[in-house]
Amino acid sequence: MRRFENKTVVITGGNRGIGLAVAERFAAEGANVVIASIEPQVEKAAESLRAVGAQAIGVICDVTDRNAVSALYDRAEQQFGGVDISMHNAGIITIRRVEDLTEADWDTTMAVNTKGVFLCCQEAIARMRKSGKGGRLINTASGQARDGFIFTPHYAASKMGVVGITQSLAKEVALENITVNAICPGIIHSDMWDYNDRIWGEMLGDYAPGELMKDWVENKIPMKRAGTGKDVAGLVAFLASEDADYITGQTINVDGGLIMS
Ligand code: NDP
Image (cartoon, rainbow, N blue to C red; front, side, top):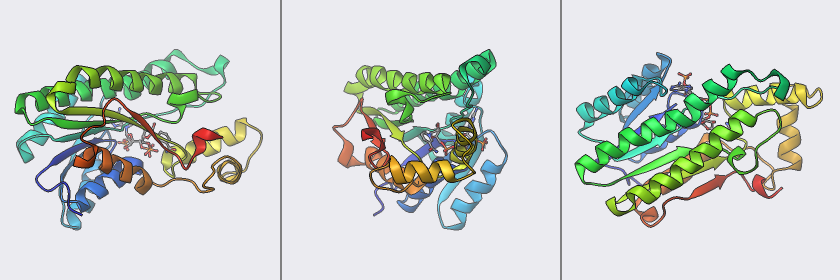
């Protein structure tokens, strides 16, 4: 399927992990792809997309910086003439006992995960409104936006904030052919998950690296496997496609059924 020919997608946190898998999916379906992250490796990731025939660029952009976010969307417009789909996926996590959580943990997590999503939504909506062509916004929340988890109240709050942004903006732009939805990945293989596995593993009782994941996969996920970036990309591509024309303001789990356990 090449459902996204002549469409341009912006993906923050698109140089690795879930974001890169989503970028690869859009590239395979014919989209022009703009990936953004803070590290210069973003250009290398864009190169890997171009190597398989995609139109792709990498842009260094700290999503907490309004000017940088604005410049990201300028760059997408200059290169490809507009933005049709915008996925706000950049995210960070720290894991600490409540007495050890610092104000810096709180502020940085909120700045990237919540304010960063908002700034990107704001910029994308402004461009989509101006073009009059509508568009698709997809915000990455987390299973923690549903019920939180131990040692990460700041992360859970930041992701619950993403759901609030999604629902509020979906109502505001509903008449302009712009949909806004959020996704809640469960346990997905990535650098972030490796960190979670190691730190939660230690804090929850001396799991060796990889053991916590194994335990959760075997005992908590009904489908008995961790997710991959490709699993998430399938949902994102659906939400960006014409098949999802009448879906907005929704928060959808992609977690092998983890939410039920
Ligand atoms: P990774 O840690 O693998 O990747 C995080 C991405 O976010 C990187 O591309 C990183 O860029 C980017 N990023 C971090 N801070 C900023 C910033 N200030 N500005 C721009 N980009 C930034 O994470 P995942 O791929 O696992 O996670 C992607 C999203 O999915 C996150 O929002 C995460 O919270 C969410 N999620 C992940 C789950 C999982 O199990 N993996 C579960 C639930 C939700 P750089 O490489 O330049 O640092």
